[in-house]
Length: 216
Ligand SMILES: O=P(O)(O)OC[C@H]1O[C@H](OP(=O)(O)OP(=O)(O)O)[C@H](O)[C@@H]1O
Ligand SMILES: O=c1cc[nH]c(=O)[nH]1
Ligand SMILES: [Mg+2]
Image 1: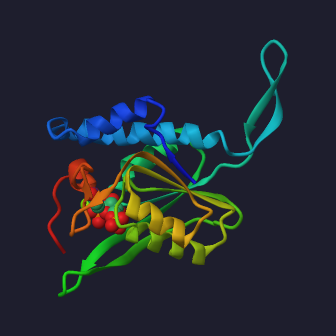
Image 2 (image 1 turned 120 degrees about the vertical axis):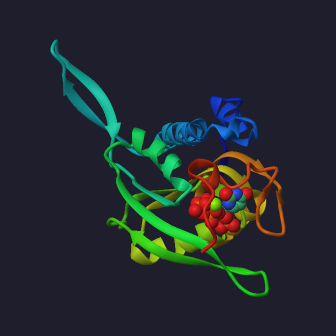
């Protein structure tokens, strides 16, 4: 299932439009904060489809019937652009366990690239809700490799993916890899450049959040 969070004219479309705006992009703090806000809104939306249990809460004046989240999810993110989006999810799922994955494009001489996974830190995943965040879902190669790796580490009960901008090609690739994944995106674009950048997209999310990196 794919949920486009901009479809309902929510504040998410406002924040995505700011992320895309070349003039506002000079303000790195706003760029990171907008990613974080999208993470927060996505956490709120995802919470609506997670199981809750009934509890009684003692207040100073009596006992209130309450519904509380049954289990905290595992929040996984792909370095480095995923960090602000991840922080937004963690602001709301504040007791979650966390996983960090570094995935990057390793370019071959013929212009093609493979995704290399280096640093990985992962909690127990067995039978847990897994939410993977990365602001850009372009070809889908980084995300599919990450999903494949995490599934080798354990068997999550369900997988959610949170992105700011997703390309239709990447969405289809993830759906082919695992049709049970739910993708929550800030917006969806249809085009990809030959180098795998989303058009109109927003540019390089990692560079815009943290500065241009030298090519390794
Ligand atoms: O769908 P794909 O074609 O795999 O592209 C998307 C990936 O590209 C970006 O990361 P990038 O490699 O630029 O690293 P960065 O976060 O360090 O900037 C983005 O954050 C995704 O991880
Ligand atoms: O458009 C894109 C594609 C991959 N990574 C980005 O940061 N932006
Ligand atoms: Mg980048």
